Image (cartoon, rainbow, N blue to C red; front, side, top):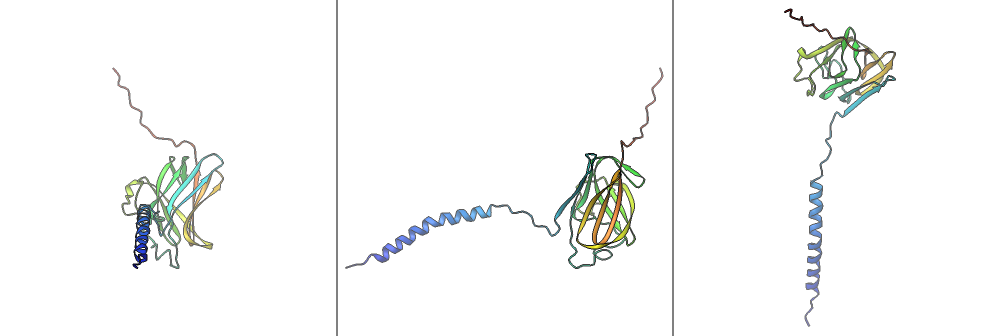
Length: 204
C-alpha cells in the first residue's frame, strides 16, 4: 500500500509559504517606505524669552558638544569668524526694536556671527538669512558689531548654549560653552527714527 503522507506534507508547506510570502513582502515594502528623521551630531536648539511687555526674542542654532576637547583657542580659534554654533548659521529674531551698544536696530531676524578672543568677543549681526555656517559670510551686510566681555563660569557647559535673561527694559543674551560666558546686553526701545530727505517742491 502506497503512503501519501510525504506528498501531503509538501503540499501543506507550499500552501503556508504562499500565504506568508506576500505578508513578508508587504512588511518589507512598508518598512522601506518609512522616512526616518535625520540624525545630527549637533542638534537644533531654540532659545527664547517672552517679556512682560508681550514681546519676545528667539534664537535658533546648532548645538556642538565639547566631547572632552579644548574649545576656545583650539576647536574654535581665537581671532577668527565663527558661526556661533554648528551647521546652519545661527539666527536671532527680535519682535521689538532694540539697541546693542550705540547701535539701534529694527525688529526682525538677523544672522549671528562672532569673533572669539580670550578677553573679549566681537558680536556681529548680519542681514543675510539662510546661510550655511560662515562660508558665504559677507561683511558688507553687517548691521551691527559689538565688543562683549568674557567671564569664567563656575559650571562647565558640555553643549554650546544660548540663553536669555530678563532685565529692566531689556534682556541679556548669554553665550555659554565649556567654562566661558559672554553676555550681550540688549535694550528694548521705541520706534527707531528713520532719516529721510524731503523732496523739494518745484515752483511754477
